[in-house]
Length: 548
Image 1 (cartoon, one colour):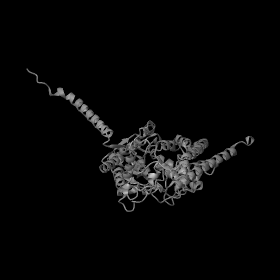
Image 2 (cartoon, rainbow, N blue to C red; image 1 turned 180 degrees about the vertical axis):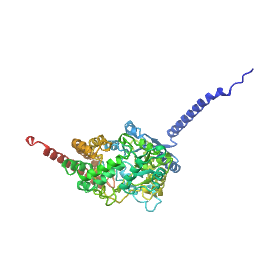
Image 3 (cartoon, rainbow, N blue to C red; image 1 turned 45 degrees about the vertical axis):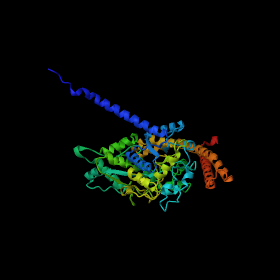
Image 4 (cartoon, one colour; image 1 turned 60 degrees about the vertical axis):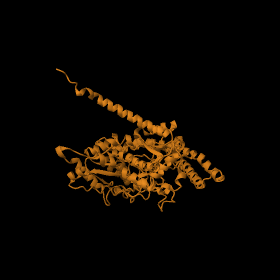
C-alpha cells in the first residue's frame, strides 16, 4: 500500500515562516524610517512621556497625524516609558546628549536638570500662537495667555528659576467612580451620596451586603495613591481654620514650612479637636478601603474595581478612559462628598468643601537643549495647544482641555474643577514639608487604619517622631532656598547686561524679567533667613538652662 505524504508535515514550519516574515517587515519598516530621516526627506519629532493610558496615546497619535497632514516634512513619534523607570530613563537620555525632542516633565525632574538640560520657553510664550491666527480673539494674544492657568503652575513654570520650561495641554481632577449595576443591586437606585454621612452610611451597607452566592464587596478599592484623594481632602477640610492662622504669606494656602514651624512652636498639635476630628474621619474612610491598601499600587486598586470586588474607587480623570474600557459594567462619577452644614458629628471644624480653584495643568512637555529638531518640536507644541489640536486631544484622551476656547465634552463636565469652597488646611501626609516628615507619617499610617489601630495610638507615635523629622526638612528647605537664589545669579546677570546694553541681543521684556527674578531671589533668601531664625529660637528655647 502506497503511503501518501501527510499534509501535516509542512504545518510546523508555517508559524516559523510567519515569524520570519513579520521580523523582516519590522526591520524594513525600522530601516526605511531611519533612511528616510537620514537623507533629509523628513524630520522626526520624538515625544517621550510616561502616560501609558491608551486614551492619551491615542489622542496624541490623532493630533500627530493631523499635524503631519499640515506639515508633510515632519513625522511625530511617541515613546511611552513606564513611570517606574521614567526618571532614570530621562536622566540617561539627557546626559547621553541624544534626548527625544520633547520630554514630559515629571515631578522627579528637579531644578538642576531643568536649568542644565532644558530650553527656557518664556520668550516663546510671549509671542502669539501662529496656529490661532484665524481666531479674532486669539490672533494677537500671547501664547501664555491662551492657557487656563496662564502657565503659572508647576511643572510648566518653575518658581525657583522663574522660567517656563514646559508646555501643558490638559487638566485633570479627582473624583469617586462607582459601579452603577452593583449600586442598583444593593440600594435599588443609582443616585450617589451627596454628603459625608450619606457616603459613610452607604459604605457600611456595602460592607454587610450579601451578594450572589454570598459574595461580599469592599466599599472602596484602595492603594497608597488612591487613598490620597479622600484622606488629603477630608483632613484638609477639617483643619481649614488652623490653616488660615498659619498662612504667613496670606496666600490662602498652608505651605509646608508654615505647617512644620507651627507644629514645632505649639501653634497646633494632634491634641486639637479639629485635627482629631479629621483623623477620626480618615480612620472611618480607611476602614472602608481594601485591607492593607497602603502597601498596594494603583494598578491593584484599578484591578480590584474592574473585577467587581469593590463598588467604588477614588482616582483621577487619567483613569476614566481605562476604567470604562476595562469594566464590563456602567460607571458613574460623583465629587468627593463633604460634611453637610449642621452635621454635628463631622462638620463643626470645617469651613466647607475644599475648593479646586487653582487646579493646574498637566501633560506638560519640555524641550531639551540637545533636541535634534527644536523648531519642529516647538511648532508641534503650538499646534497641540491650538483650539483644533487641543479639542482633539481632549476628546480622544477623555481629559479636560487646558486651553481657552476649547469646548468641554458634556460627559466631562462632572470633572470640571469645583470653584466654590475654602482653601484646604493642613496636609495629612506632610508631603509639602519634606521627605523625612512624610516618611514618618507613611510608616505609621497602619496605626490609624488597621483594625487594631486608633486615633490615640497614631497620635502618640507621630507626636514622638515628628519633631526631629520636621527640623531636618526645614533645614533642607533653608539649603534649597539659598541654592536656588544662587542659581539665579547667572541668568540675572545676563538679563542685566541686556538691560544696560540693549544693542547686544536685545530682549523686550528683559527689565520686567530681571525685576521678577530679583524679587524671587530676595523672597527665597528672606524665607531661608526666617526659617533659620525660627529654628535657632526653637532650639534655644528647648535647650537646658545650664547649657545656654
